[in-house]
Length: 216
Image 1 (cartoon, rainbow, N blue to C red):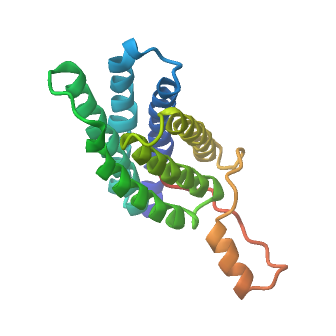
Image 2: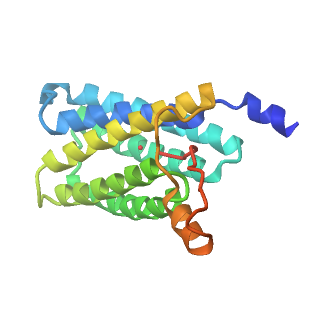
């Protein structure tokens, strides 16, 4: 019964990461000036659908598969994109122009959440861990931008990096699920590798973990 359930599972991680990739790349290009300001509403809609709705749906599916870490990350990042993009769309479409400092507290909370995810995903693979490290830095510098202490350029560059890394991991996850082989390398589980090296002989070969959770 358990084996049959595993065979029926889809690669939810890849779906969530593809959504994150589209949302983050679109937002990042807009922040560095690659997309004109006149297209701001369109940018927010794309970010809301792919970064928000897609990740939430993937996260809910992951939770149904009893994947707590992946489900929590996907749904929480998805609700971040959904809430922020909706607030900005309301601000653009009405006379209520919300101040950027409104988003600073949520950025701080998500920076802390992402820092925790850096530690947890270090038990999965190196790519996923580094992705969350970049996400943590992105939330931190975005907070400074919300407070008017820096421009949107650096956060935009970091969003592009997040998008590219998410796309890379999505492709790797999808090819692993389809072929059963890790054709696109994700790197070893960093913490597992460190702990095993202190408990086992150096000659012991540790098999890299190909699975992951996500994200954004």
